[in-house]
Length: 274
Image (cartoon, rainbow, N blue to C red; front, side, top):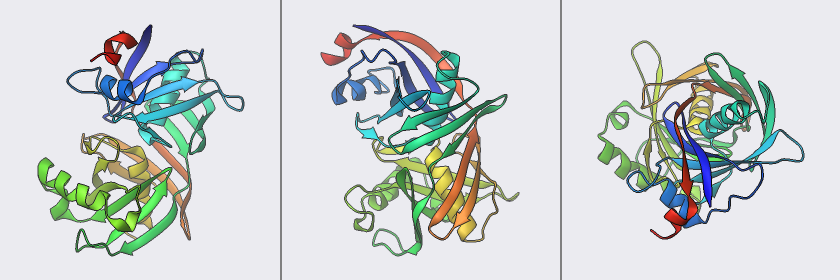
């Protein structure tokens, strides 16, 4: 069977996008992983299917590049909104489903803004065995650890990945582990962050839910005020607005750029047999 796809990215987070409103695209975990392979497939941090919803414009199903399904991806959700709008599935303002709950989105001239899940279970200054610095933790659909440190931010890619892998699987974050974000500040006050993502098991150019948890932690630490501009490793800027709560943040809004990289078709048979 042959399917159309769009390759999109939100601030450098890239995804294989599939319109599956007729619900005929059935991909195994292994096939999704092969489609997302940088060298042997289309390539992407993840794959997103747009499917029907009984309560909203559509439902977003998000899969990491290892083929495993995840509850939420912030930049993926922004791409899903733009993709659905272009396909005529949704209007300029919309509500759609995710496994982390419903998401509202707005198509803007300079990008897409979504209202994303609350940040919950916030822990400030957690001590873990992996690093000597304080680690902050919160869940925005998916779990994130946050470390504020200029020296760690400046590490090479390989050193950053080694550090992040030790934090990602620390027992303090349970069997599921956590995505890992390292934050610093530029001289002009901009927040700079880099992220290691579970399921991708590598550093990515951006992470939307990571930016939301980073902003929440910085607000609680009194290091920033909402809205917080978070500059990604790829050089894009995500604007995060949050309302501080005792357990994290509410009214979380994430705005940033979205773009189509290319479009094409693929045959499932080509990816099931390699």
